[in-house]
Image (cartoon, rainbow, N blue to C red; front, side, top):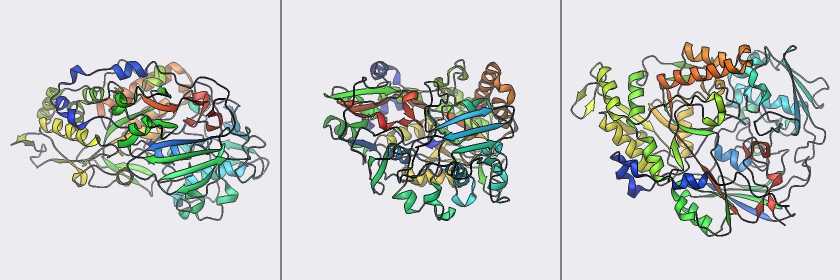
Length: 589
């Protein structure tokens, strides 16, 4: 499970009803949907699956998917979704995300020797029949770390492996800390580290990469051309249960069984992922056009009584957030650099914007309780790492105005000026993923207006998903604030998302206190669970106070399944890299 895949918005609200909550009268909202969803199972009933059959899966999106079929270069959730029938992780986990020996490879940690040993199982083969080798494991690290690939996955966390930083900086041709004791064609890789970290026993720790890349298939492509190559865009190789038969770029992917799959023959003859507009998602479910489709939460009432459909639900390890741009990524130094003069580099302004929005009433009211505000950047699924005493930013317009008054943002007519008396316009970047995103964002802009803040959309409109993603990643100077979302890792370390040395820290904030807390959370002392929990609670308090990134909401994720399907599960032990292990899914006998 990897941190930091950009989420598409999952649909919220009908435009007609917006005015009610814009006036702050969301108290009569119903939570019926949430009450129902909380009773849904997290997996289908366990029935024996028969061989054969084709399933169609809806990928709900108003924009084509980018279709990067390589995990080292992949950064958006739609690409990850359409890749899932083939894109299998090296490791399996138990239901608490602890890595076990049941996956394609095993993991052994030696704290004294400071080594991580990965052993690929014999018979784990790429879909062209070649054994997955030690070099394939090493090659994945090279793709991430070589600057020519422009991989967004590189983070200073990887520098824990000896020689990784030197390779990334171009000072070494190989990564000295990656040893292949049986040679490149062997199956054993030893990572020599500066130290081991407490999270390394769990999937998604951010220090150990959990995928391999087919070296024999990609080695002749220059790193700079890897992402655009046919081998990554049209004809990828995977060692998962299915292989790509056909890609209609941005629209659909057809998968057929990988005859070399190491666990045995998968159940289905074909899996077809197809893009469908969120506007017609409910109609697709009611007409049984797809065997698997995600329910758009604002459309729940339209689909809840559909016959021959089973609903499975979870609250995913994810969240949506508001982030303030306060710097940029320095590619030469491979680090985030803050701009002390950035418009949003004023804590009072950020806090006021967080208090001014009525997130909870908007989302609860219009999704029947299926979406809800969350208080901190550590979701409740992380157990005791989540600080349940921290209430976060609940809607308080009066407080927002008081903070701005005190900080010297004086009103000049309708709008406030900066403390220096200059006109203040705040440029907001937000995605258009469903028809109701527009009224939701307009509601937020109205709320900020009530606090005297002149907030305008970048380009005067909501942004298309791929364009949004491009502007955020490349620090478009026109963007002051953006509304994004993450899928998260199953290990709660925050280095991957918010450290100085990760490209995924898209707000670009860097402070000595944040760096200190991130290091303490993953330090040798943090092998003591109680100490680690304390540091996570300190970090949540610090992040909420600074408000560089403010969590907004999470939601129930409900999938509508053909009632004849079996083997579909949200249990961590039955998934792979936060996706279905499609090997299990089939039609019941």
